[in-house]
Length: 71
Image (cartoon, rainbow, N blue to C red):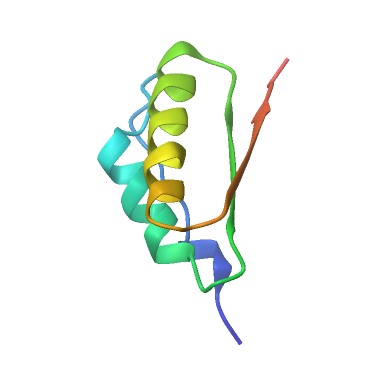
């Protein structure tokens, strides 16, 4: 059985994960069924996740994303 708890992309407090870290995590999590990205509704998160998802889709990885709020 797969341990999904290690398949996350994190960063320092109050910073967004880098575009490259996100893309690396998407590639690591893709086993053919696609990847779901959940991320905060912050400027850096939106910019980096959108770009990483677009590039992953260009690599034929199905990606869906959901922006969440902590309010």
